[in-house]
Structures are given as structure tokens and as C-alpha cells.
Image (cartoon, rainbow, N blue to C red; front, side, top):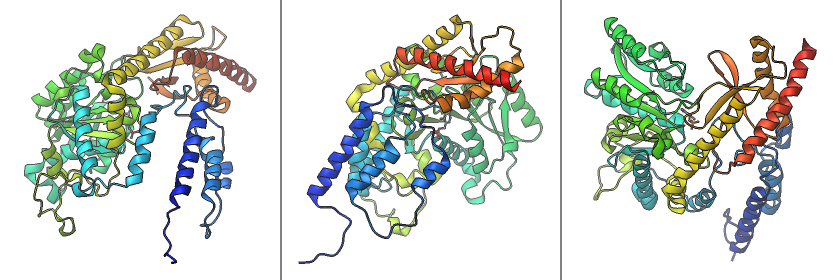
Length: 490
Ligand SMILES: *Cc1c(COP(=O)(O)O)cnc(C)c1O
């Protein structure tokens, strides 16, 4: 009997394709050491590989996997490898590779409880675990989102809708309100600017408060600004604390910020996308004091829980606030006919269809345990201190921040002790693209107090001390060459 077409392979063929896929994975992991961190591809080259119209005929899936191995897997920027220091790139956990495969294979939609009963409960569970891990408390509500940017936007959306609930902001929008003012330090992440604009608050109403030399918010300047805004007829609305800035890992005085938020009746949001999960480390508890007082927190499981992208999380004080922010009735979602305590995530977030991010997070906590995860975070921090020590003890590098977490910023000083600051600036700008072209390590730069610096973020459970030594060796080699280029250019 001839059956109509489906997209399935025979079970035998599917099994052999799964096997082939896992062979590709194993081959990649077998060759992490010594592999280039960056492949040095050009957009033109990569575009040319895929430049064809929609294929009318399908290809042999085994051949397709060969193509994917060659063009996609083996050329990938080695975020998973031990020579990645750029941005905030965690290495990904192997148990999450298994989780993502299994989660896709059952294609759950975590929008409605009965479409994904177990994944819905797992998501509630890992949200709770996130709160417990960082000391935010057991009653927290929350939702898994794509990452830190979405977690901040979600938290600030709850902030706006709950803060102005009695004034019906969901119905009337922000028209008719006095300008709402948001406060954060000038080291705040750029995704907050995006949130402020997306929420209709406007960047003119986002106050960037100056920081001290340790990149921590100036509390006096903050309070002064709040008073000034009140005096000028504005409406202070929200303070955002950094639990680890992306530039240097600086942790704002979270407890003192909570005091100010209390004093002026403001919403208190914490951006813990980078550093929030490090609150679980015993030695850092003091630094994070006050985190439990936040009304909302953004954390990023694809950072210090080492998850493969994407996995962010917004935490708020209770589930009800999410419902009050996002719930909308719709006949086709039969929200009226609930017979038991089913928790529908679509009633607690703006997305309806949602993938099952919870499985990889749940499996990671189960497979490794919180103790080992904390130990990996501690190791990242210890290795960062090692890097900072090597820099301090050297003649040709200068340390630009004292790392509490796992970001070290520094400058390469070159071989000439009389090099003027302006030339050192040029050198440290030039060295970043030169290091990318070299490709042995992947590291990027930033600007601190208006000077270009090299920025290393160590957030990879595969990192070892010898990798740090290799990093400095490569920067020196590339730095000497870059200095030569500058001299030739005059
Ligand atoms: C990474 C980061 C973000 C953005 O998170 P994404 O997951 O990249 O969207 C926001 N804030 C801080 C402090 C970060 O480090």
C-alpha cells in the first residue's frame, strides 16, 4: 500500500543519522585543544557557500550532515573551547546537548500546561532553583526567556505594569503620565537602554549615574538626582542595580540601592545577567547582600550556569505579578475552563509558543549538582585573579580593574617604556583586530575611563591555568607585531 508523504525517515535510517550526528559532536570535542578559537572567515566567503535559491529537491541526509560538519561545525567560533575570552561566552555543558536533543524530539510547547505538563512543571522548578541558588527566596516567580536582554525587558515590563497598575497603565499606555525616570550607573548594560526605549519611557528619562574609580555607582549622586527629578516635576520610577557589570564585573552596593528604592518608593530591579549566579558563591555573599530585596532580577543561565544558548531568566517576588503584567483572555486558549491548578506560562509572559528551555537547566543541576557548579564559578574567579596577578607582575602589561568576578581589563604597554599614552591607546585598539586575525585566542576590548583596554572574561568550565599563560603569550606575540606596524605607519 502506498502511503502519503511524510517528512520522517525510516527508524533505521533515523538511528544511523543520530549516530552520525553524535560522531560529529564527539569529533568536535576530541579536537578542542590546539584548535583555532576563530576561523578568520569573511562574510563573502561564507555567503558563497550557501548562495542558492530554495532547493526544490531534497538531498541525502547523510550527505547533508557531512556538509554541516564541514561548513558549520568545524568552522564555528570556538565558544566551547578553552581559548575564548570575548564578551561573556560560557562553554556550554554536555548534558545540555543531550537535553536539547531530547527536548526537540518531543517538540513540547510550554505556552499551555496541557501541551507540556512536565516541561511546565520543570520550568517552575528551575525558576525556583534559580531563586534558591542566588538567595532570592523560595516564593519567587519567574519565567525562562531567551537571555539577559529579554530577562531585563521582562523584569522592567513587570515593573512598569505593577508600579502603575492602579493607574491603569495597561489600558491607557504612558500617555498622560508625568515622565517616568529610571536610574542606573553609567556602567549599565546597553540592553537596558533598549528596554527603556521599548517600554515607551524614552532614553531622555534614563539617568546614567556616575561611578567611582572602582566602577560602582555613586550613591550620593544617585540620591541627588532623584531629588532633582522630583523637584522638576518628574516621576522617579525605578532603580537598577548591577550585580556584575559587563565591562568589569563591578557589583553595585545592592543593599544600599534597596534602601534608596524603599526611601523613595521606587521599583528595584537588578541586572544580574552576568554576575547574578555568582551570588551562590560563599565568599561573595557579602558583596551580594541586598539581592533578596530586589523586586525583579534578570539572570542568565547561558552565562554562569554554562548553558548553551539561549537561556535567560526573570525572577520576581511572586507569580501573581507576572500574571497581572501579561495575562490576556482569549477564547481559543480556553482560559476560562481550567479545572485544576494548571499553570499556563502564556498567562505569565508575552510569548505564547515557547520551547522547553527548562530541561537542559534541570538536567544540568541534576547531573552536576549545585556544589560542582559553584566550584566551577569559583575556579573562573580564581583564574581571573591569577591572570590579574600575572599582569600586575609583568613589565609590559597594566591592570585596569581589580576583578571581584571574572573580568580582567588590561593594557598592553609595548616594549618601549617611554611610549606615550596616546600611542598605547592606538596600540590597544589595533591589537584587538590583530588578535582576531591571529585566531589562536578570541578576546575583545572595551573602553574604561575613555581609554581602550583589552577585556578578558573567564566564564568557561573548561579553562585551566595553562590556558591563561597561553593567552598572555599570544597577546605578547601579537602585541610586538602590532607595535611594529604602528611604528611603520609612523
Ligand atoms: C550579557 C549581559 C546582558 C545581556 O544578556 P544577553 O543574554 O546577551 O541578552 C545584560 N546585562 C549584563 C550585565 C550582561 O552581562
